[in-house]
Each structure stands twice: as C-alpha cells, then as structure tokens.
Image (cartoon, rainbow, N blue to C red; front, side):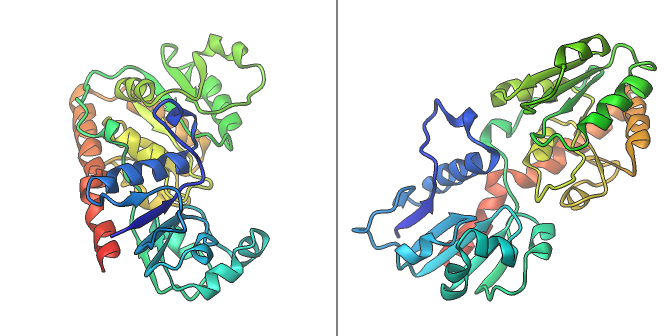
Amino acid sequence: MNILLNLKNKFNKKNLDKLGGIEVLNVNLFSNLKRKYKNIYFKGNPKIKYNVIISSNDATIFDKYNAKKNILWLHNKLQLEKSIRKKQFYSLITNKIDAVFVSRYLESITSRIYNFKSRLVIPNFLDRKFENLKINYRRKSIIVWSVQRDLGLDETIKIWIKRIYLINPRAELHIFAVKKFKNKNIYKKYNIFFHGRVKKQILIKYYSQATAMICLGYDETFCLNAIESFSCGTPVISFKKTALNDLIKNNINGFKVDNFINLAKKINYLINLNQSSKKKLILSTKKFSKKYYFSNVEKKWTNLINK
C-alpha cells in the first residue's frame, strides 16, 4: 500500500520546534503511521500510484493524484466562504472525500454543504515525548499559559495582579508561545514571566511542576496544549467554550469557570489545596490523558485507511 501524507513544510529533527502545532501533528502522524505502513511518503511523486492520500486542511492535493481513498484531516472549521477564498471549493465537491475532524465541536461547526463520503471524528494525539512521564506530586505555585493566541491574556494578567498575586505572593505565572506583548519586563515584579516558544522538554519541565494550566478556549478546535498538560498530571482551567467544553471534565482533569474573577478564585483554591486532594487530582488528570496516546488513537486511523 502506498500512502501520501501531504505535508507542506519540509522538516527535520532540528526544525521541529519551529513548526506550528498543526505542522508538528502532521509530522507526528507521518512518523507514527510509518511504523505500520512502510510505503508512506510526505512528498507527492507522479510516478507513484497512491492507494491513500491524507491531507491536512488542503483538498486541492486530491486533484493532482488519483488515489482510491482521499482523507481530509480537518483541524480548522471549513465554511463555504473559506473554501472559496482558498480556492478549494471545486476540489471539495468533485472528489470523494472522507473527512476526519479532530473533535466533535469541529465536526458540528463545519458546513454541511460538503457531501463528504464519510464524516469521522478522530481526536488529536500526544507527541510520544509526553507519553508515560513520571508524575511529580509535589507541585509548586506555578500556573502555565502555553497557548499561542493571546486573546484573554490582558484580562488574565490584570486579574493575576489584583486577585492572585496579592493573596499568594509566591505564585508564578509562566507564559509560553506568545510572541508579542508590550512591556514584558515590568510584570516580573508580580512573578509573571514570558518565555516565548520553547522546546517540548522545557514545557514538560514546567507542566510537571505546575499546579494548573490556563487555556481559556476562545477559538480552540481541539487544544493539543491541554492534553500535553494532562499528560503531566496538570489540570486545565478554562471557560465553557469551543472544544475545551468537551475536553475538560470538571474535577477530573480540570475546571470550567464562567469569568475571570472565578478563574482567579479557582487558581487560589488549587494553590492552597491539601496534598491528598492534589494527588488525587493529578492522578485522575494523568489517567485521562492516556486515551490520547497514539496507541489508543491508531486503531481509528488504521480502520479508515484499510477500509
């Protein structure tokens, strides 16, 4: 069987940390499927007859190669206006496509106008670096923000200064991935630290020490950052929005709050939680993450590919 996994970005071990979340997932899917399917390629070749083509968000590849099975792996919502703007509409309606959505939420907000051969939800999966990690039960008063989008970050910082730092002056807010933010250094006196984009091993280090991770969930179609946090036993606090509303189970792997004031209250509560309750929460959070190990997601992919 010949499989083409359509990757737009060239990659190697040196530049993986510079790729975006979707690109890293593409590479990881390629690497994981390569263990089972030897003839899998990430660059199209007209001389090869492909049985299966898997493409992330881009349907135009199906016009170039005539495969028996076309799989469109959707990470972002696909509305009519977007498909026309990106010149994909013709490809979407003329090819027989199996659509794979990364969450029930994404599947529900994607237009029904497309007559997909099938609509299937296969969740995203953890990078193997995050599998089977040793759990640290002695947590520090560290809260992590690791989402690249900064929507809600201004309000979070304000509430941190007014309602968290004053009550828990040893607490620290560590902000990763956010590239642009004015006057970062002035926030150090409130124990707010900006790190930019870092390697996964550094994120694991902070997740493993942290009390909680913040992912507000304004526009998340899945939130890989959240399950990375879960794998370290670190619960996620979020608003009741988008895919996070399905991903978070209250008091099991995180907490849903209604507003920024309640966000601050929940952080203060978790910082001062007794050790026995913390350990129970860490264990249940870690256990929840295992369903996103690739070994547990792989069967859905192989069933679709082999069908």
